[in-house]
Length: 133
Image (tube, rainbow, N blue to C red; front, side):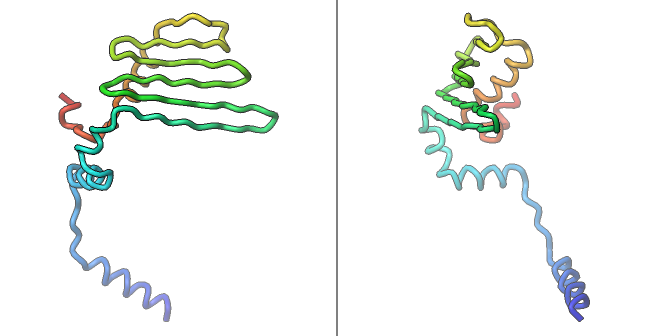
């Protein structure tokens, strides 16, 4: 009996008209939920922090700070060493003390690509049409 009701419910629900949302509609709802484009763009600095704790005393502390228009600094600290990845709007650089490198050096091609994605303050969806051009 219950199985029959479940099948009947599924059939009834599948008969309802389906309205697909476009990507623009979904993004517009997201932006509205976040307070609107004006409020999003009024934010000039964004700071994030996180920590990973593993067994045997391993701890990794991460911090990221973004500033408009496209500046980013990422810090990773573990075992008394702090590494940095940064992008100043023109150049990407890193410091990797756990690799014995204490002086800044340029980011590699893949590292630069990754940090450019992180430098996008509003993320890939907000104003995505302008970003594709």
